[in-house]
Length: 113
Length: 112
Image 1: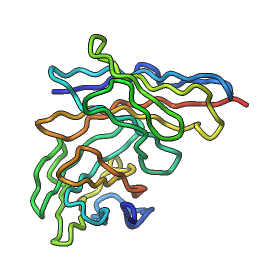
Image 2 (image 1 turned 45 degrees about the vertical axis):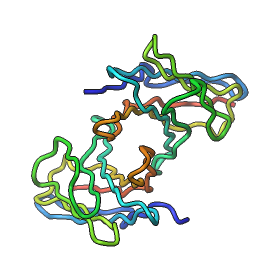
Image 3 (image 1 turned 30 degrees about the horizontal axis):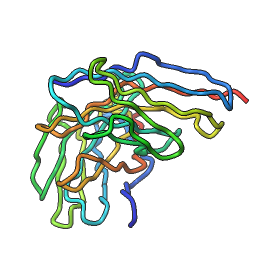
Image 4 (image 1 turned 135 degrees about the vertical axis):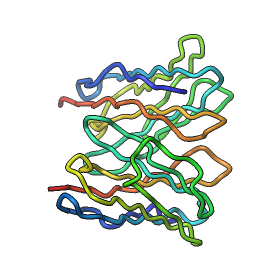
């Protein structure tokens, strides 16, 4: 079965600083990978996804993620964080078989002014 | 297109009661999945419905059930509520040709 690890429970950055949120997955074949963001009291919004092809994926709100098969990672990055980016971020993996995503435990992003 | 809608947004029940939550998917989406989100367990998959049939099921007790109607709208029911059922219940829909799920805002259930 697939699994997802987000090693950082909380991350604090200053506004304008760069950001990298880590995600590691466990799955034998090529996975489908996702990053979602959740603001307090809201549902999940899709930031970006990787199915195949170019390993650097661009998403909404200036986010990007890079799929590294050798490291089983799919880290999320943003060059300059805005205060409105403060939220919970979830990495998820799905497989070609079951197609139900498994979510990581999430990383809470705190942005200092 | 309108997004995924869930009703009600907030619900307070007492132990032993039952509750029904509703989800209307994005138009054209025939797959509806339900998730339970709690601080302790994170996001856990409950079940997926497609064309009125349960296609996948997570590891939840039989007190959790669902159904899907011919218009793809879905309901989930929790019977004999327990304190531990307090959670945000999220519904997500997708077409069958993609693995991208679109989530609703959730229903916050509090069991007293």
